[in-house]
Image (cartoon, rainbow, N blue to C red; front, side, top):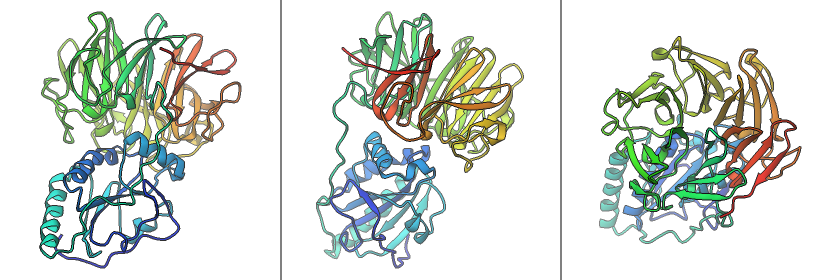
Length: 487
């Protein structure tokens, strides 16, 4: 980062969040500026956020981070949806909606995430792509602080234009990610993700107990003392509830009788690419997002490494099961297949179904033959909202899936819909949702980025994530009602 170049300024007319006014390089003169080019669907972009928070804390008087949101999916271009992502990811720096990719092009960005570093005189120092660049960025920013402090050219102190977006009105749930039911269909387990806990409720919505204190952490112990970090998917094995503790990069086990939480896999550190099988307690994980269990084997949608992993309870081993780690859509044998941020799992006998979100596809793994096939969906940049048959079907970043009676229900997240897929004919149709975000019920409901599904007859339960609610659809007539969560 030795050569400094002229820096393109921020275009006028763009929408800004987390700031009282649009910013410019002139307004930021005297500050070190780090531009983070991101899109809110991207797991790699999510992985950068903790590093950005650390940099913002360390250089709170010298550094301003500006998020430049460049949407991959059409749904992500909408400012209100970016605002929800800012709240969900707890982002506290200014964000500009570069929906036309003007800044992306002017800075010659080629991939998400990418960062560009600008010195206090407004000169471009350099850029870097990918995640895991904390050391490099820390060294480069530290050098700029030293250089410009010596010249008395730093404007110290927090940026006065920062104004955090207002969070939603206080509610019992906050961005619930996934939902499952026990075998009897009498208890619901809800990952109350932004409250960093699991809510256990009956089918009328009455809370029976909560698992976790609500604080962010990786603490084991009794329900009221245990801590999580934005948990997502779950599965039940007898009296034990297993949880994908996503941002802790860990797998947790809840003893529902003893009312205790223990860590059974992961170290709390994010895994490097291409991990090998090993001892669960010494093996790093990478953003586990959903779980499914079959014959004492827990399958893990390892979103961060673009793989399906397997935790064998009998052998006490964990490691990759399917996927090379390359982000793509490739069918074939387990070891040669490729996934792209798998975020939902569901089992139907020896068939494991995968909501492969970044390819907007639904995949099938035949556990008997070890073959991966695609039911609907094409590739990383083929998406839309098209019902129909086979290759003509288009989804948009689907995160949730549930198999029941040989059929599949899909949370087509960025289309704000629930869809139905017949695996044999590969026929897909909309069951509920208008394609526009909203918050209604009845026979013409609206959802807002739903992420989790579970059937406990006679209802399909839906984690309507951005609406901070659980709704249930009566399977016979498809009428949707809201399940009021009460203490």
